[in-house]
Image (cartoon, rainbow, N blue to C red):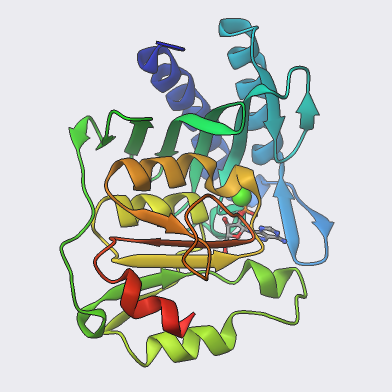
Length: 254
Ligand code: 2AM
Ligand code: CA
């Protein structure tokens, strides 16, 4: 056992309390722009500072890579942290945002936890040991027909001013599915695949800290994690998570 999952849960729930303090006082929240269309709030910075300090104290052997503070110390074995995934939703008072923490060792994600404080949902997975939501084992959906499927996606690429912006792909896939959702947090979107609430999710131009924990949680719940060509692996620039049963149907539309 590399770490204690109980300790990790305690730390991430404390981080959630800090985030909620800001969330419950949004009119005083300071929001800045990292770059055009890319927001950072004082809550993102405070939550990440807390996680960095606490995780480094509990586990000095691991380095740290966070969205807001960058990389420090040992990067072969490190925490990969998104303090608030879904910052824009958070700043608008919407509930769908989460804290994402993964432990990566030699390019392999060993542990992933995602906590959504406003929903009080806690997802956790350890490599090879399955995934849980609020302590109860979860698994992907049984949907076998893309025509009946509920799919999720996101448009981080629009915010990045990317010319390949997912809109055409979205139209293609939407026309061949029954339900489409856009929740705005890659980490939680992957947890929804894990929990069978959506049957597939894809997004492009993300970063490892957006997807590291969620992808492990999804794959431990039985999801396939591939790129848009169907090659297995974790590719933040092109991530497709499915229940496995509709992978062959969605791939030609990617
Ligand atoms: P964030 O809230 O931490 O910024 C929504 O589609 C997803 O894309 C979220 O996980 C969001 O993470 C991420 N995201 C938003 N803007 C982004 C950008 N410019 N580059 C990479 N990821 C981004
Ligand atoms: Ca993020």
